[in-house]
Length: 86
Image 1 (cartoon, one colour):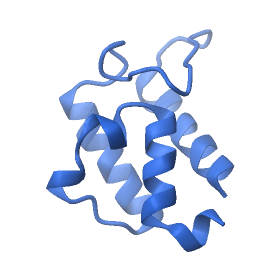
Image 2 (cartoon, rainbow, N blue to C red):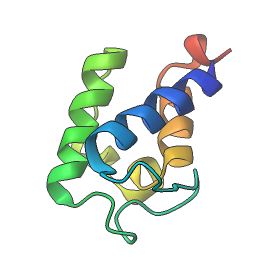
Image 3 (cartoon, one colour):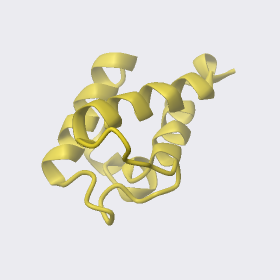
Image 4 (spheres, rainbow, N blue to C red):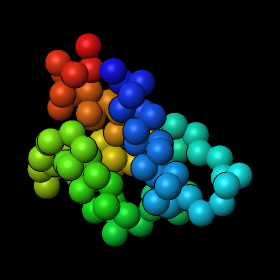
């Protein structure tokens, strides 16, 4: 299931933040440091995660370790939804 998390997050980021068809994005790349998303983008990502996966992202969970790369988001989702990631 984690592969599906990765694919869904990558698709969302690509469709909403990457405006070049040839733009490459590594799964470990910092989305903030590379300028792919900004603080408003973080809020959009949070809304996507909450709506798509029926989770609630607490204020204390809005940290780079959870949301700054595709792999971080995948790990975060796997931890929030352990039954779905098996």
